[in-house]
Amino acid sequence: MAPVPAGDAFSSAQEAEIDRAIRAAETACRFEFSVYVGAVHGDLHAYARRLHASLSSPDRSVLIVVDPAARTLEVITGSVVRRSLADDAVRLAAVGMQSAFAGGDLVGGIKHGVGQLAESARQPESLHEK
Image 1 (cartoon, one colour):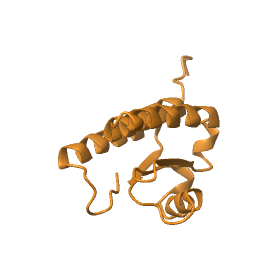
Image 2: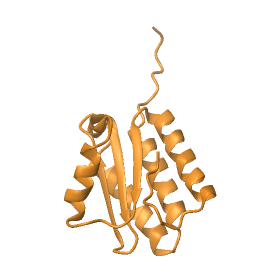
Image 3: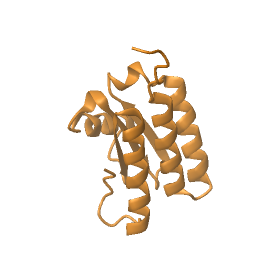
């Protein structure tokens, strides 16, 4: 689910787009994805870690925190997720999101980032017979 603080400027269609991207990502890699868009109070990393810890299954979760006004982004991954999702892949997804955000495409950046993280975390299919 994409928790968006009250009063933010996402239309219902945009929220639905983000929700579809999250559902597709969860189906692709079997990890949980959450997105927080809004004001961050205090230190970004600490705030994002607190939000991540409050998720129902933080070890198996990816949290993307975006503060558009401050132009900041943080991605937090759980311990189980980190076994499949390398830090370099997270950095690459973050760069892609920041690029889209700089171009004024908040929704597109989130969708792209979620998809890229899921693809990077996806377990390869086994090609051998049982």
